[in-house]
Image (cartoon, rainbow, N blue to C red; front, side, top):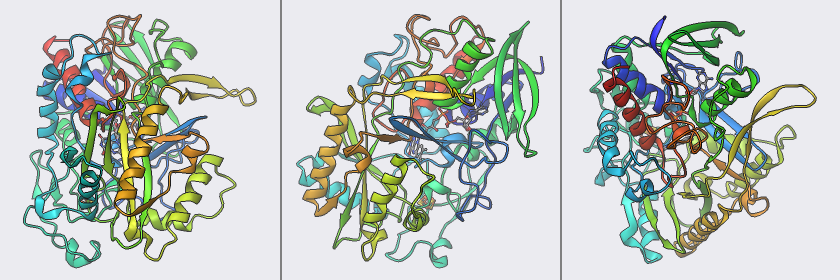
Length: 529
Ligand SMILES: Cc1cc2nc3c(=O)[nH]c(=O)nc-3n(C[C@H](O)[C@H](O)[C@H](O)COP(=O)(O)OP(=O)(O)OC[C@H]3O[C@@H](n4cnc5c(N)ncnc54)[C@H](O)[C@@H]3O)c2cc1C
Ligand code: SF4
């Protein structure tokens, strides 16, 4: 065998399993379809490589992979470091009661807690210092109080390094004098970073390296322990061979697809909710290299109840482009609002994104949903100082978790691609509760909300938090993998990413995915596999 372990993907599941197994002296190979990025290469101009094109990944391999399906769109990362490169840094635990239903009996909150803590320590999570509150935090707190739920407001932990003595000023955070206030330091994994100076660019890459993304901690630590991390390697098949598996992939680093393969005793799929499910579906149904994967594959997919309602404030500087993208929540996860479990968060967006959206013309090339959404945002951005006065009220909730990922073949081209059946019926009550809370928060704080017409007209959603598809279960009849992430019917074949989560969390999922990955690696290593 070429390696002890091949890990497919380098997001939360992949980076963490690779790191922990490399620490235990496993010979680890990580195959990641996306590029390596750093602050000198982050896309900035409209012509830069922003997006990943699944039809032409050898030439279009930007870091945002946006998939539009019939009733929902999914945003995910494609990069060394996976979704962490473009995420909003929120690192939170799921509520204790999440694990009481639908999860394998072996996993409880108490059992997962040490793994949650391991992720928090390694990613150096922290809340916004009290001297650095953003205008959006103040609006969130005021909103919570005005709707009679001040006690539900809380600051959240972020994978960002703050400098407590820094005090953000009222001016443009991109002013060189402000940027110069970022303090350089070396993190616990030996990587140089800077402290946060509220640039508001979290979702498009931090210009001062204040975000504690996976490429700043777990991945360099894995490499320090001998892991071989290969960017622009797109895995296409996994096939059992004597003593392990053969993993086939296309190298994309030459602008054309160059097929190759490597072998290992153990394979860990960590290609994300869509990626791992897609790969297993292809292996089960197309190449038939893994014909015995459970019939549950693809079922139980969740949008995690994500929803965003922008609101326009006439006389209030909300400054959505200043400070970390998300910082706090108003927590209704106890089900006290008509039995629906959700929380509200402050959203934000980089200046550059707003400029980009304002400048986007009519897009005949775009789908109806994307154009409807862009037109409504442009309408909102037309005010005198639109960038200062928009509050993107954000939320996640416990949805119906009843989507199904499946393969679908185009009858004209014969191409097979991933498809998603999503029916809003079971999820509509929680989404309606979120919208009504957003409207209440906006109204009582003097804002004019614009419920996206994509929702009000078409019940169309967009989520950055896809979950499920290879859910955990007690057997192959109820799940695709067991509580330790091992695929039923295939010894030493694992899934360790958001795909194994058996239903909505209702909160930002990366810390839970990370904790489960820590747990998969520990069980596998302790077992001496
Ligand atoms: C804009 C945005 C903001 C977000 N903000 C937050 C937040 O604040 N907090 C939070 O908790 N979560 C947030 N998320 C969600 C979070 O990023 C994901 O939940 C998390 O990254 C999922 O981890 P994962 O390991 O399952 O998959 P990913 O992180 O998606 O990693 C999967 C990796 O596998 C690679 N891959 C896929 N297919 C293949 C293949 N065939 N071969 C090789 N490699 C492959 C992908 O390129 C990717 O790098 C956000 C997401 C987005 C898009
Ligand atoms: S707010 Fe700015 S400085 Fe702080 S982490 Fe986000 S991008 Fe970096």
